[in-house]
Image (tube, rainbow, N blue to C red; front, side):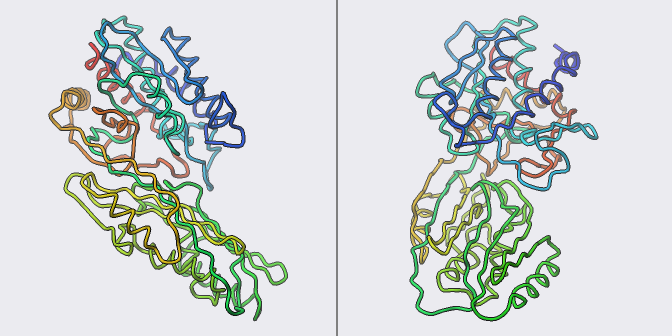
Length: 466
């Protein structure tokens, strides 16, 4: 079977359907949530769109109360091969060259939020299934594309789905890197709430507000602080701030209204699995604020940020640093920073810990942060599949046959739906040597890679299900 040839016959259709899917703004929107659309209208629209594609192609489809869905190609046995995808995307962020939901094609690339993570690969996997169906190839195992809608947040979709549907015997998530990801770090989302301090004396400058970051799993690319000047003039803040951003060579703004100053800084967004790939705007702004004489409560908030997180993405200052040979270093991303003078501060922290790590030690360390209380601690345990498992053996064979390259096994800090299965791995779509632009501005997928991945997925699914 020449899988690449079958994909090439459908190239125009695959590209067009990928663009159409990417144009749907499927970002979590609690404001528009309802009984039928629990994560908002955009995600609901994307779910219905994909299920309709499946129905039109002759697959069996199912909508599980708007939380999830599946598209299935029937087989003769009870053992299901699962393809775990998600259609929700992180917020678009700032600084895009083109409309983040325009799905514009430039230089052989489709640019859109979700192009790489995970709506582009979802269309690739869909067409992989469609090719098998179009060719009427005999299957012993049913193939089921499971469609998640809350992967970028709290995985409520997975929880709901597996309350009602059978767990696949094995499968993969097209939501990370090629060749094969057989190990995923544990993922912790933790929230620290500032214990309110009472002012004991007046201060020169009051921190009225500080905001940076939208999601725990993204490096913040923008930060803003509002200051009230009690003593001195506004130039005592504006001049050193302008010098600071000039020295760092970053973009920033300042606005003055009477004795109130609002300053902002731009950073570089990146996925929390490797915070060093980005520049945390909140940390940049916090470092500047340490140079000012702030009120006690504001100073406590800012000093905690800089002391525990500035220049440290490995948890050294939190005393949780750890590494193992399977999955590498523990990483820490301070993804959300929020403060008002009235209510105090809140920190949203994303930690990726190695497969042999101990989350109880991490919880203990966070509970001991001075001046803060640990309010939330969500722990998704690490995931690891033995390299001799038939799933991995099959995917290695397919990848090597399709690419003529060795299918090395790799570990990541990202969390994919693969960890929902006892025997699940992440399998593409990012090929070795390609830049990882997931969660970044101007996210894109190369059309060449989209088609190449489709062929690999088609053969892999068939080999697993035949």
